[in-house]
Amino acid sequence: MELTVNGHRVHAATGGKDFDPALPAVIFVHGAGLDRTVWALQTRYFAHHGYGVLAVDLPGHGTSEGPPPDSIPAMADWLAALIDAAGLKQAALVGHSMGALVTLECAARHGDKVRALALVGAAAAMPVHPDLLEAAQANDRSAYDAICFWGFSRPAQLGRDQAPGMWMVGSGVELLAHGPAGVLHNDLAACAAYESGLESAARVACPVRLILADGDFMTPLKGGKALADAFHAADTIILNRCGHMIMAEQPDATLDALIGFV
Image (cartoon, rainbow, N blue to C red; front, side, top):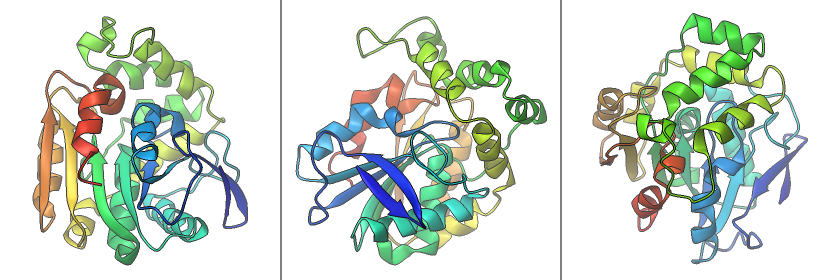
């Protein structure tokens, strides 16, 4: 599906069914340097069970046009504009990693547009090592390798995959490598600069669920729990033997955690 947001064409996957703005809407937001395809194993269920689904490519990512917003607040405001462009009054938001920060900030800044918030692989702050930022700025493949080395659990590195025929780590590296030049650095810099996660969480009024992993090295479990404590009311589901790429490593458990909440 294509939408126009702030004058630019935006692409969103709809889970295999035409998007109907009259249905309860669920919007999925990807992480740094990624695109809508990371949600392929979750979106189809909702599209075929009475929901309107939009798994968006952020501006400059995937096949969406326009410059990538250079801060988490700017991405959050763009997401609110997307909700309007889709003809929606409200939507449930599901965000992973950087997308979790974007959806969190959107719920804090535009609370009237958000009816539920699910944060996957989230923490209030996501610092980025200077060497990784430098490699990403140079579009060096070592940046993609490092993200996938730290982003997937050790069992995933050895080939454990719940979706037969897929290679999670290799697919992750290639997805990052095929992104437009400069986008990964833009996203990582936005994450590194974002410091208001706890304050924004305190302003969120809608129901909140965090889906965290005990083997997440990029947003460690301690940080996710601290973020959960900052909300007025939030519940937390912790997946075992799982890394940061939660929806890829444990797609069924991620879906189960979303069903009945969003």
